Image (cartoon, rainbow, N blue to C red; front, side):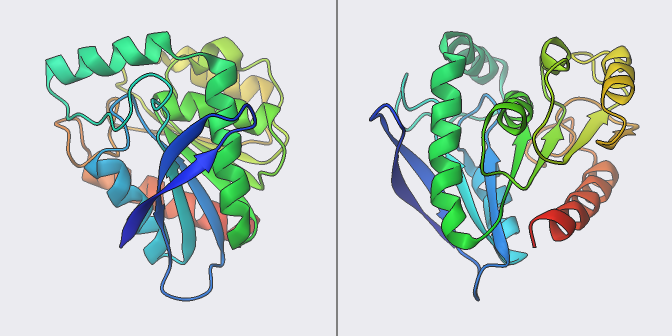
Length: 222
């Protein structure tokens, strides 16, 4: 369904992005931010799914500044490679790359953003620091507890696993205390529950979270 295109960030950096177009005129657009594994087959399938639901979907290659065409699976070695690149990534540069994707996606109408793990962290910061977003959805954003003091500029929805060893439930309590107008849901699942390529996948939690995400985008994006 999709194809790779080139984006240009505000500092001149050129990065690739996976673009999936809906069958008819877009009802809006969704920027899909990867986990630490690159724009791999799972992230491409997520973008394809949003296109099937009527949105122009753009998934920027967030590691292109460090290693182009990076994509791995979910073995321990893959996880180590992904984490190493994430640790090298510079936040300001990453947000410029997200901004480039938002600019491209705006050709499809109002823009929502959804991110998974590291991408969820970036989606939260994009909602707080970037213009041009109508809504943001955070799936188990790793490290998000460190930036919850920031204030979103658009509506945000959160999804977290109650058995996520990486994100304590205290973080969810902090979200609810600081941002009562931005709903957050928890599920009887672990980290990465949305990814059907991983052993941590929880089909029920993933389906419910996606229904809520689509309803949220229908409300705020189109």
